[in-house]
Image: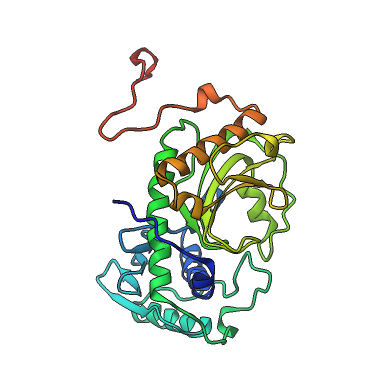
Length: 317
């Protein structure tokens, strides 16, 4: 049975602030070694059966993997030569975690030079100078991860209903949100940029093409509760006026996004169905108001063990 735990923002907030910075530190190690991919997809992390992983990171001699384990509460850094180092996930300053991570990289012979200042936060204090005592509630973090597991499954099912370009389901450590994005295939107007402590070139490349994007975050960014969001870029003039019937969903004028509180999903009779309804309705709102070619882009939701049916006469060998 899928677990949709209660994740009140008040209990999660301080631990989330620590984890946000720790994920940025480890994410920047991956960015320093991995060739750039469209929309910064090379930078993200992925949900696993124990937490979050970077997946394999290519190095000059060896390759590496970083895994946040939210069961044993440790960061595991592995190299393809068999070397393994661990950093405890416990209450500590960001500066201490930063130092311990670099020490672990040095011990396994991994490159340990990477950008040392956070992105997408207003007060971008270098990691090594964030010396305030940090918080880490293992139960709050474990519940956050369990929520990610539940959300990840629904997002991946939703992704199967689209034939066009679609992102993986992945967690962006800049804003600490799990996201999945669909693309119309058309070039978008140049994004104005202006994201806090993020180069405009990165933002503009991320939004180089039209998107309908949905995601989940555990609170912050103007909402003091865990919630799902859905937005379009560029935003069609009538996007926010489209009726969305999923119980609890609403359009947030300031954010310019549809919002669905996590609590409304968790307490629904069928949480996965409630979330899928929100994803489908808000995607259609974006696609219809922006006049996407939905007939060419969409397909039925995928089923286990059933390949897509195609017209063999259309296959080009």
